[in-house]
Each structure stands twice: as structure tokens, then as C-alpha cells.
Image 1 (cartoon, one colour):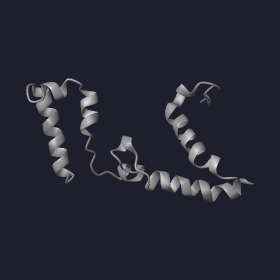
Image 2 (cartoon, helix red, strand yellow; image 1 turned 135 degrees about the vertical axis):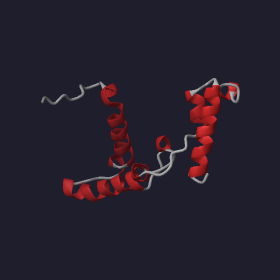
Image 3 (cartoon, one colour; image 1 turned 30 degrees about the vertical axis):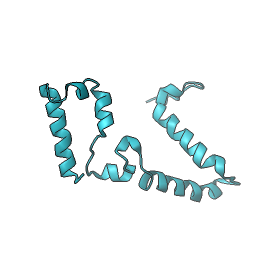
Image 4 (cartoon, one colour; image 1 turned 90 degrees about the horizontal axis):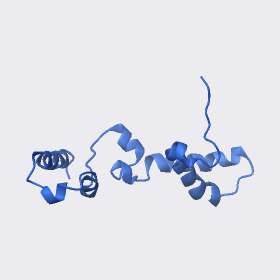
Length: 114
């Protein structure tokens, strides 16, 4: 096995990690001064706890990652459905596929109590 690190100036190699790094840097590291690693640990742990258990993430149906990971309901936002199937709002109710998608979204909303 060989480690393969992203090269400098190649943020597209792993966009998810680069996005997380930017968030940690912008919302935690840039706002605090640390004199040692031991001094930074409680602040970083607090940020991690908030990020994973409290903060709502739009990409996870406005749930924190811990709640999304634990299961529960995921009802896609109507705008996301329309973005995935641009023809859906125009042909809603006319094709079998649009009826299936609408039925699925309604069933999920009922199961989740929305």
C-alpha cells in the first residue's frame, strides 16, 4: 500500500476534505489563538461536537450528521427533486415516472410526519 497525498494547488483531488478544512480554518482556527496543541484540543473538540451533533447540514435534509447517520427519514426538498428532474414540474402527472416520483415523495412525507 502506498500513500498518495494531494499535490499543492490541487483542491479538486478531494473536494469534501478541502471543504471541511476551509470550514475548520474559517470558523475555528482563524478565530482563536493557540499556544500549544494541548491548548487547541478543547476548542477543536467543541467545534467537532457542534459540527457533528448540532449544526444542521443542508445536504443532509437539514439534519446534523449524527442524526442522519442514526437513520430516520430523508425527504428530499421539492427544489432538489426539480433540479434532478428538470422536466418533472412541467410534465407532472402526465408520465409514469413523474407519478412515481410524486408518489414516493408523498409516501416519505407521510412516514416522516411532515
